[in-house]
Structure formats: C-alpha cells, structure tokens
Amino acid sequence: MGRLFLVDLEGSSYSCKHCRTPLALKADVISKHHIDSDSLFCFQYFCSRNRRAYLFYNVENVTCGPREDRMMITGKHTVVDIYCVGCGSILGWKYIYAYEKAHKYKEGWFLIERCKVLNPAGTPYVANQEAQDGQQARNGQETWMAEEAQAGGGMDVDNA
Image 1 (tube, one colour):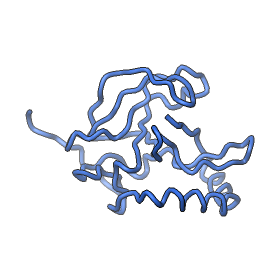
Image 2 (cartoon, one colour):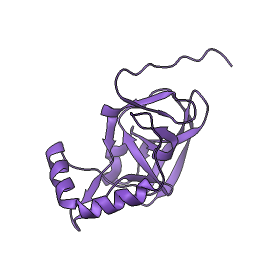
Image 3 (cartoon, rainbow, N blue to C red):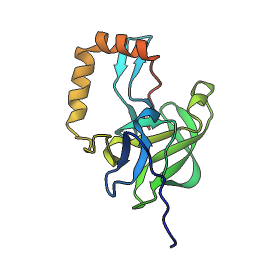
C-alpha cells in the first residue's frame, strides 16, 4: 500500500464520518438549496440516488473510480465515483461531463452524500432532519428566498 498523505484543510470543514478524514471546506459548498423560479418551489438540498447531498467546488483527500455514463433525472452525465483515501468508503461522485447544455455548470464539481460526512461542527447528518428541513422550507420559504437572493441565488437539483 504505501504511505498515506492527507491534505490538511485549514478552517471549518466537512469530514468522512467513518475515519474523520477532512474532505472539503465549508466555504467550498456550492449549493445546499435551490429555488425553481417557475413554480416558486423550494428544493432544500441536492440529491443523489435517494439521499440528500452537498455540491462542492473542491474536495480533497479522495480517490476517483472509473468514468461511467449515468442517466439522471437531469439528463445524462459522465461521472466518476469518489472514495475517501482514509477508509475507502464511497462518498459520492465528481461530474466529468454533462450532455445537457443546461447542466454544463456541474462539470468538475463534486457531489457528496450528507449521510457520508460529518458537518463542520463534527456531528453527523440525522435522517429525521430531512423531514424537519422540508417542513422548515415550506414554512419559511419567503425568508429563505430573500436570504438566498442576497447570497447570489440557488442551483439546480439533481435526483440521481
């Protein structure tokens, strides 16, 4: 096997829930929220395979699997699965190529499932939090929309 070298992330970061290997800075989260402006419906988080996820600009301390084409709700994408270098657990994937022009912005970005990481406070994602998040999104949609508009808008949801 060889010597394991980890990139040390300075600042508040997400880490692998199994081995606590630092993965990404809090500042590198692209989107946890999305608003569909046509229907004014609020998608609280990105999704992967049936789980909530985060989309990141940059992720460290991961290895990539082979390229594969996947048909997702948002269209066909070429992706590579990403694995923690500390323990080898699958975390999510990296977008290599988007066949749909509207989804080209995802190329080079990383999707990590929330249930696979510890948040910057060092606590795991709680499964029943998903229902609470959905209720809060419906109850506080106007407030959230105003906050998101000030922050520069949302991103697209990907239910794969």
